[in-house]
Length: 176
Image (cartoon, rainbow, N blue to C red; front, side):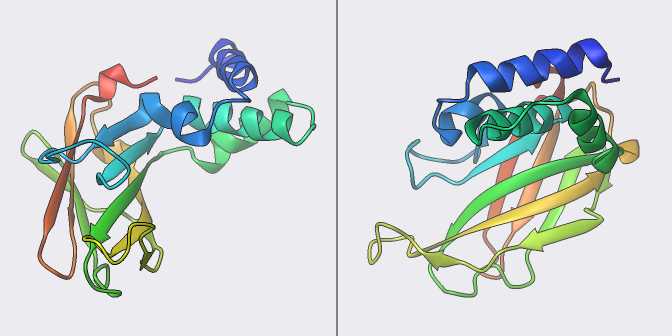
């Protein structure tokens, strides 16, 4: 449960880290693909957008644009995302349509959970094009948190059109 103390802590976290690059700011919520041979800008990755991170990121954005960080804004974010767990995935492929029909599930113990909402952005050419992989895509997956034990680890499994499976392990209790 997110109370006022946690909201203020998250806001403070975002305000104090306003100058960090976004990738550095998001690093504590980052998980790399399990079989990644090397960790660099080409590595597939996933972020878990916890309520703490959503509030902290909003506070960071507000301070950076010289707006006031308000408790009511954070409470609205909590209300907007109540009951859901949001994951952002960066996947790579070698065709411009490799994410068509993207399939995602969460596995936790013997339970399999499907997302209730998916935002799959179109792949774009990678900065390292024409080297492999040639395309990258950012997608967001929304899961109902009532289907998930928030005190246990889970694996996010993403399968793309090219039948490649990506696995991201999240030890949920370790995420703020």
